[in-house]
Image 1 (cartoon, rainbow, N blue to C red):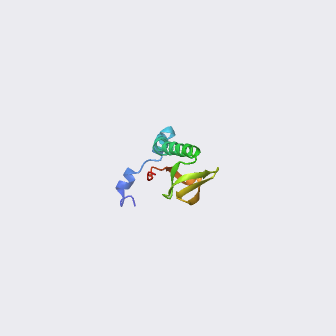
Image 2 (image 1 turned 90 degrees about the vertical axis):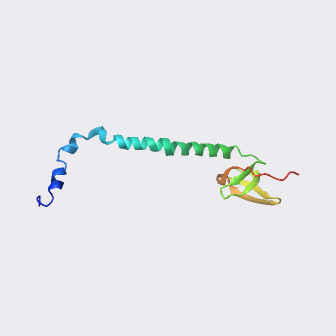
Length: 111
């Protein structure tokens, strides 16, 4: 069988070659990937979540907000978990506080 695949047998690593390069050197690429993922993905996501939570904690009546569904409205009531929004004159909806995406920049007509 060695005559059929001489190149494969010649290029195959010997049994002792893998043991010589082991140790910490094998984990360096894995550690580098974890560090890169932390700084490029995890850390910015945590920072954005903290900013969103701070915005949710700072909500008050008469703030103009937009929900994650895209509904713009003015806050008319607040509890720990529910926000009441007035989306049109006399039309109020209740949404979870976590579904507030951000402050609205919608312009209203001057009165």
